Length: 323
Image 1 (cartoon, rainbow, N blue to C red):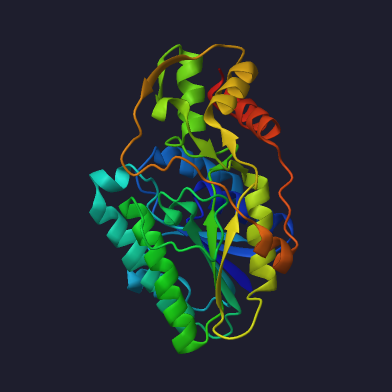
Image 2 (cartoon, rainbow, N blue to C red):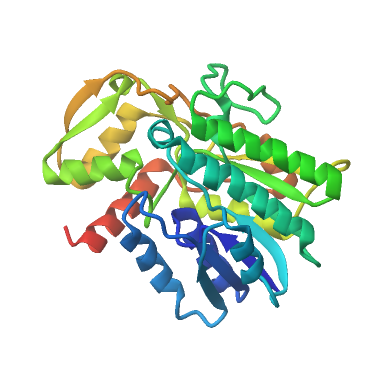
């Protein structure tokens, strides 16, 4: 039996596949290796998995239903961890069609795949803290209203949750949505602030600090994210009724952007040159995860503080780029 991981060349997908393979599990990874950011980073991640005897990979797009169906033919898929998506809040303003294809069409295709796979025990899928929109009542709880997104990216993720509930109701498919909160760490995404700040500070360039730094983020280290994903995937749906639930996966400890920058400057040994700018369209002033539900149902506890996590990222970044 195998776990199908979509977005296996991505940041979270790579780390999740690596963790499962280290436990001796079989993993089938798929990814379209698009150029939203440098595909060489994705191929470098996959190269680290390629020599694992229990890993196989196919370069396909989840928006192509035939390709998705063909790749699982003859495979015994026990679980799906669906992480493939068009990421990025700001990019969704520039290229909305990419989000419709990957996050809407692609998600429906994965739900159809789950519906038709014999022996499937559970599908976990990536949602986002962005679905909470511009709420100011903190922390965010899964029971809060989340129907006023402020970006198309967030709207597609909320749509994923709604479609998943419908499929769980109609076809009794166990499905769990994962509302990730600001994931960071080694092998991360170049479009994320911690990466771009690190790059620009080291190169002596001016960093752009939105909302003049008056922002809170519930930074969640990649190892903690993977621990939550694997716990949920292995245990499956918890509860009664329609077999669909969503969980916040965060650090439960929001940090001020100014404090984040101070830690990064200390680790890099270099002061940032900065330009203070207004809030970007689609951004939110704060994220803060209430993780009571995942603690109760899966025993999840985040373990990595921000300075430890950033030290790990900076060490990886310096080694990877030889700087």
